[in-house]
Structure formats: structure tokens, C-alpha cells
Amino acid sequence: MKPTLLALTLLGTLLTPALHAAPFTPEQEARIKELIRETLVQNPKILDEAAESWEKQNAADQAAQLGDFIKGNQDVLFNSATSPRLGAKNPKLTLVLFTDYNCPYCKQFDPAVTKLLKAYPNDLGLVIKLLPFKGQTSAKAAQYSLTLWQQDPARFLALHDKLMSKQGMLTEADINKALAATGNVALKPEGKATEELRNSLRIGTLLGVQGTPATLIGNQLVPGALPYEQLEQLVKTELAKLG
Image 1 (spheres, rainbow, N blue to C red):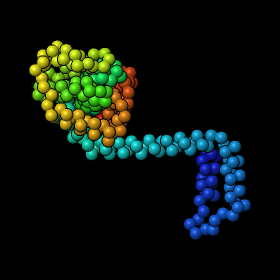
Image 2 (cartoon, one colour):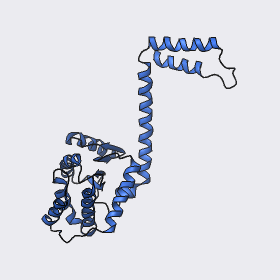
Image 3 (cartoon, rainbow, N blue to C red):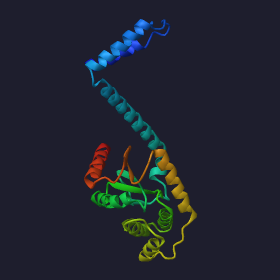
């Protein structure tokens, strides 16, 4: 046992009286405080080690909880007919992407996701969960694209790409131009699209999504717009686990 860990163990023993023991006397309390001070002076990294140990345990607990949550919500996360799905028909690994048409980081991240799906056409699937965090046009664009997915999945990607490729915040005019450019002028948002948005917001909140983009890769929720190389490495690691 390392000296610092031994010191922590000894301190824990000293600071935890036996269940039926008498309280410490003032002299004993003074000596314990002095021992703590001496220990910290002699081992200045002791608090860092204790904090690191706690962080590792906390991370392990959170990972276990996330894994349990994913197992209990497989259908909502991976098999919802109302959530857009891209990539392989029978993938080894399915990613879940939480994204927003008005999010600049999502727009930055989208090409990396597209490149990844092309690089692993037989191994990867992608479920898209739209989270309209950024204003009314974010929600409106999502309602249109989700309605199109539910009516004609084969036409979804063209509209999705058009909305995602527009730099900056979408305006009403931008949405109308995207609809016109993809031959969807007559498209009208349906109630099922709003229901899908509510479900995505609910599952995202329960999963711990705090912003977009966020990608579920195996049992790991990865925030932010990762560089392609880093994203691919995470996917390779998960695919290797699956054999």
C-alpha cells in the first residue's frame, strides 16, 4: 500500500470511533488534528489522490447507470419508427445523434458523421434525434424534416442535408427555400412530428444530454463536435468489442 493511502487508512481508523466507544477527549481531538496536519504536510498529494480516486469511482458509477438506462430504453433509442435512420440496414453498431438545425457545432459536425457512415457502410447505423434547442425556426425545420421522414423516408436525407448545410440561424425564408429546392413545397408538418420531438427531448434529458451535438456510441455519451479522427477511433473501439 502506498504511504499516502496507508495514511488515509490510518486517519479513517482514528476518525471513526467504535460504535459503542466513548467520545474523544479534547486532548485526543487535538492530537488527531495534529496528525492530520502532519500527514498532509508530509504527503502534499494526498488530497489530489483522494479526489482522483473519487472521480474514478464516480465515473464508473455513472457509466454503469448509463449502461443500465440504455438497456432499458433500447426501443426508444434505436428502434423508433418515427426517428430518422441512416446507414446500414443491419448494422453491427448503431449511433444515436442528438442534433439541432440551428446549432453551429452540429453543422460543423455533420460532415464528419456523413464521412463515417460512408467509410463503414455495412457496419454502422445512425439514428437522428432532433432537439430544437435554438428557437422557433429550429423546431419548425425539425417538424418539416420529421414529417417527411414519416411520409417518405427516401426523401428525408436531401431536406436534412439542405437544412443542416445552411450556415447560421435558419430563417422562415431559408426553410421555404430548402423545401422548394428538394421538391417539398406542399409538405405540411404533422402531429406525429411534434410527438417525436417531445420524445427526443424526454429521452435526451433522461440520458443526460446537455447540449448539441451529442452522440451515443455504445454505452458512452460523447458531447461536442469531435474531429473525424477521434470520432472514428471511438467507433473502431466499439466495433472491436462487438467482434
